[in-house]
Length: 194
Length: 195
Image (cartoon, rainbow over all chains, first blue to last red; front, side, top):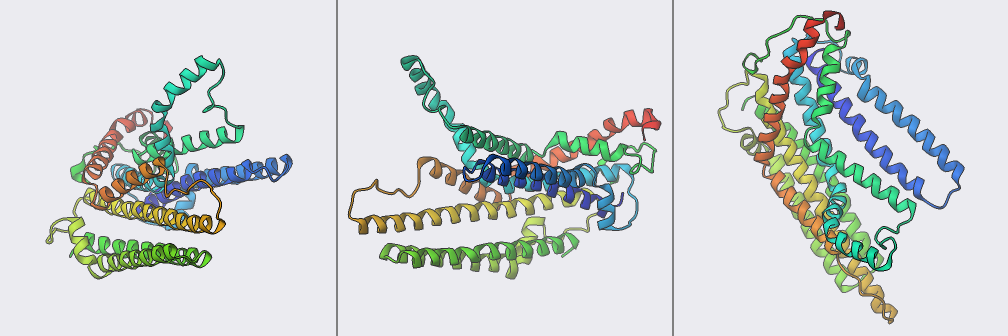
């Protein structure tokens, strides 16, 4: 793959992840609203799930051909340079996506920090009244929202940390893919000769 | 100025324009709030918010467009930097630019939330005065919100300053991950049929 193709691939991956988060978290408002009946909700959810899966598949998992089409032809890089460019551009993009998602996750992080202060009164309430603490007595919609927010916050933190496992997987997938690996020789990787 | 300086300058100009575009609707929002419930407090908040936004806009345009060259030199490093021979040299610059952008985004988020809450507070206060009945006094923000704003403000200022520790850590981790490539590629070399 050429340099520009690799950068395009990284941009597509980041856009795919951002689209996944945005689509999943914007549809929950419709899903949680009590205005509509159940059937439109299920249909809407299914349509959204298919659309999200389609976008994610073509932008995150199988984006090589799309990246080649967008970036056009270019000089093939050696595997070591390819690894560097892919790692660096993916990491940059993912960290940026994480930082963009951070403001929305801050309220959830503050709520998580508040949990230790809520445990003691909740436990004493549980022992005193022999019932579930009022803090936990929430409707299913609220629990769904809490779980969604929690996963979003965790994803944000993971992205800011550079998503190491995801990048490793992408690197392995890209460098071992037969369509990408025209050069089969093993290079000696050293940062000095890049 | 070398290639890296030019790249940084172009990116900074882009960042400046992007945030200038983001700030402009906020001034309209502030005006809309005042039109909704005109009172002395809401007019005062509107005036201060407008002044704040105009000041932010002026600082942004001055720093990122007019003095973009100097800021690019500060971000990239020394004035007479040699042309980058190694492809790794652009990595810290890119991370620093990214952190400056994210810092602006965080500060933008904090400022818009604070001003939105202040406007809402004065509108509710005006409504309660007119109603003449006792309703729970509106508050500007809860403790949780204040804590969130404080965290965002701290993160925003740190990122805007270039986040040196964060950038160093990210660059170190990226290079470490690249070095692992050799280890990653070994099984593939042992089994060429996998390629």
